[in-house]
Image (cartoon, rainbow, N blue to C red; front, top):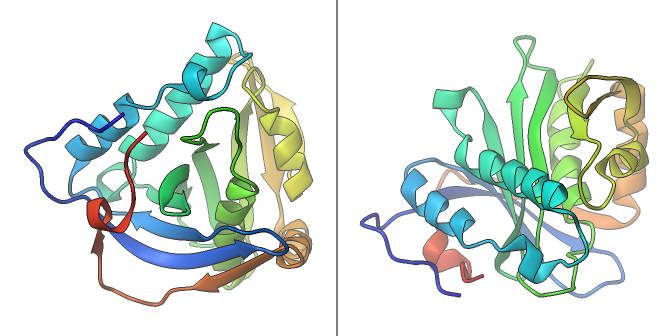
Length: 220
């Protein structure tokens, strides 16, 4: 499905890293979302049809999944006090990580994190881990870091277990169906060591934004 055209012509993003999963084919690229063209993002996310590309989940699970993708993409930027990472696999968007940096500049709260695919029945390998690899690396350079998040309990692909695999520990649940989780500095260091064994992540140091419509294939 083609994304419908908008009046906007630019969707700016800043390339921040590229990655490869060791032993697998496929190229990943990470971008910092620059919300110069929020209308274009709205149009993109509107065309993501999760029941069409991933079967077997309840309506509530699909709704939860879609809401995380939508909010992760659309609420990135300084006006929201948040940073957004867009992950692309073989030049097609596949994930978003939306987070806030705390006042101490070393801690972070992950607001939204989700992955998706444009190919029915297929998952993008390790896309979520690649985005957290970049976040952990950035924070670890500052020292004394920790990351918190609230994981949806009733959501596809067991996000709570995925975060535990990354080193997060549960610190309680609340009435909204969320699992409160945290990872501290020693666990982040250990996670970075484990991630580096399977993912080659290379930072891209540039201040030049790119037009994502020209850089990536944005068809769903």
